[in-house]
Amino acid sequence: MESQTMSSTFGTLFRVTTFGESHGKGVGAVVDGCPPGLTLGEKDIQPQLDRRRPGQTRLTTEREEADQVTILSGVENGRVLGSPIAMCVANKDQRPGDYAQMQSVPRPSHADYTYQMKYGIRTSSGGGRSSARETIGRVVAGAIADKYLHEEYGIEIVAWVSSVSTITADEIDENLITREKTDETPVRCPSPEKAEQMMRAIMAAKEDKDSLGGIISCVCRHVPAGLGEPVFEKMEACLAQAMLSIPATKGFEIGSGFGGTRMPGSRHNDPFIKKEGRLGTATNHSGGVQGGISNGEPIFFRVAFKPPATIGKAQNTADFEGNNVSLEAKGRHDPCVVPRAVPIVESMAALVIADLTLQQRMR
Ligand SMILES: Cc1cc2nc3c(=O)[nH]c(=O)nc-3n(C[C@H](O)[C@H](O)[C@H](O)COP(=O)(O)O)c2cc1C
Image 1 (cartoon, helix red, strand yellow):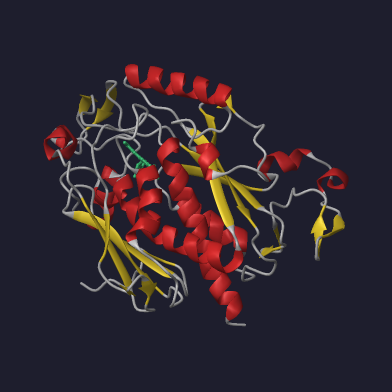
Image 2 (cartoon, rainbow, N blue to C red; image 1 turned 30 degrees about the vertical axis):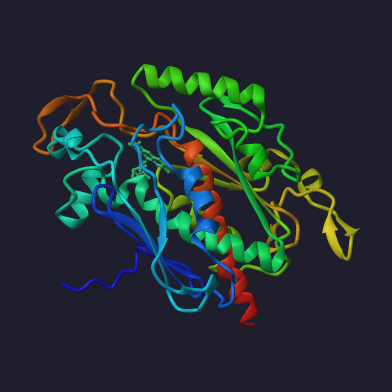
């Protein structure tokens, strides 16, 4: 049977294909279209992988993976050649035995049922491609895009946890926030007081064999005006697609987002003012994008993540045959995904902006 889909490939000119299952031998990505000459080594990629890695703190899954990246091709003497850059990361700490009951019982709100319906077959454990291990490919590719954007344009992409469950930190200044500041707390919320409350809530949920959702905010600074391809590849449309392709995401907002609907236009409009060497805006309810094209202001958006599905608490559900069963999921799972999803959001933003940058250069 021939498949015409390219569902594991993302981007037009800066293109990434991710590969690998959760409990297979390894995962990774092939990047095609990275501009040649960029200086690149594994040390440029590893820091973002370390931020995504499981087992970092007690707030995340206890699966223990070193997640060391190896560059297989496309780089010589520390410079990108312009040929495909293949990168892989080995899986080491698989425990397929943890998934024995889940072979007959699809996990509520996970992807076991839908993968089975779509493909008629699925991996016997760990969620296969629906597992967050797939996002390693996005992070290794995103780290390259991020380096390119930083060196070529001075672009800075920073994401942080702005809420966990009902605890919200809305006092963060997106003009000043840095990755270093975000990493000062294990939950990756730059407000120490709110971070403390979030960590307590996550530990209580873990204790209770339950899980919590949260929101990640992200800012992309120094993005030049003019990026985004109206009408179907608008900047915000590409960002929304990229973000909603991350597992466990449930919402995307740019600029004022849903909250903006409560403002009159007179307050919502962003008046133009003269800024250093360009026309800028006094406020940024637009989130740095107008008409699908970047306007030179910081691009600001938020991504909502649900409480992860695999929980140890007993749940009444049905097996594949339709028989009522009680499921208490075994295995090591994240009680809340947002602390680890921060570098994934940054990586997907970098992939979108790198691709739109190359498209603008083609004009
Ligand atoms: C960083 C990260 C870690 C995750 N860890 C888990 C986990 O431990 N257990 C789980 O059930 N889901 C986890 N997920 C979410 C699942 O992969 C996702 O919910 C599942 O594939 C179903 O897809 P959907 O929620 O997008 O519909 C994680 C997601 C991310 C981004």
